[in-house]
Length: 315
Image (cartoon, rainbow, N blue to C red; front, side):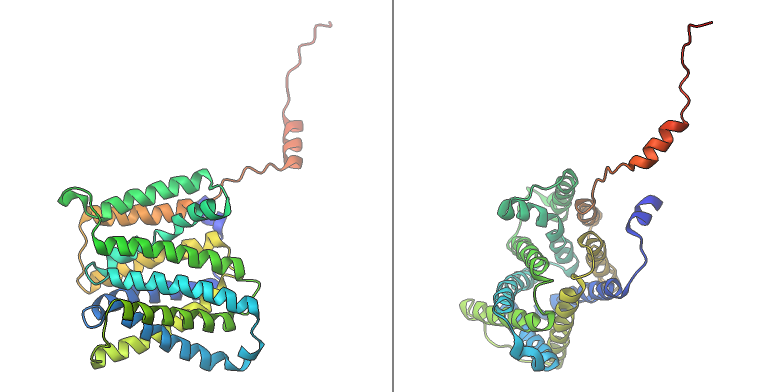
C-alpha cells in the first residue's frame, strides 16, 4: 500500500483539490436527483437543469465568446450530445433505483473507456485494463441483486448502464480536445447542446413541465449552477491532471454517494455493497500501469559489486 501511494505521490495541487470537491458535489447530486425524479420527468429536468447551467456559464464567459473557433463548436456539440444522453439516461434510471446504486453503476464508465478506445480507436487495452473490466462487471452483477432470482437487469438499470457508455464517450472526447480549445467557450456549447437534447427527449417522451414547488425550483437551480461549475472545472483540470490520477479521484464519487445515502437512510444489501467495492476496485486497477523500466547504469554498478568466484586451476 505504501509503495502504491508513493507511486501516485498524493501531494494535492489545486486542480486535484478541485476535482475532489467536484466528486463530493457529484456524490450528493445523485441523492438530490433521486428525490427530484418523484416530482419531475427526467428529460424535462435535464433540459431545464442544463439550460440554467448554460446561462450561468454564458454570464461568466460571454466576453470571449466572439473568438470561438470551428473546432470549439464541433467539439462542444459532440461532447454536449454525450453529456445530454448520459445525464438523461441516468436521470431516467433514477426514477426507480436508489441514488447509491445509480452512482455505483455509473462508475463503470472508467473501465469501459479502454474497451471503447479499443473498439473505435484500435488502442488495445492492457492486461490490467482487462482485469479492471472483469472486476467491475462482476461488481455490476452483484449490484443488480441476482440473489432475488435470475439475473435480469430491469429497465432503469439498463438505462443507467447505457448512460455510462455516453459518459465514457464524453471523457474520451474531453481528453482528445482538452489542449486544443478554450475551456470556457467549449463549456457554453457543451451545456447548451446538453440542454437542447434533454428538451428534445422531453417532447419525444411526452413529458410536461411540472409544477415547480420551492424544493424543485431551488434544487433545479442549484444543480444547474453546480453543473456549470463541474463542467468548467473538469475541462480545466483534465488539461494538467494525468488520467490515472484523475481516475483515483473520480473513484470517490460513488463512495461519497454511499456516505450521504447512508446518512439519509438509503439501504443497500451486503452483496450489493461488495459489488460496489468491486466496481471501484476495477476502476483503480484499470488505470494502473505495469512499468518495467530498468536503470542501466544502476544495473551495471550492481553487477560490478557482485563477486563471482572463479575456479583457478593454476597452482
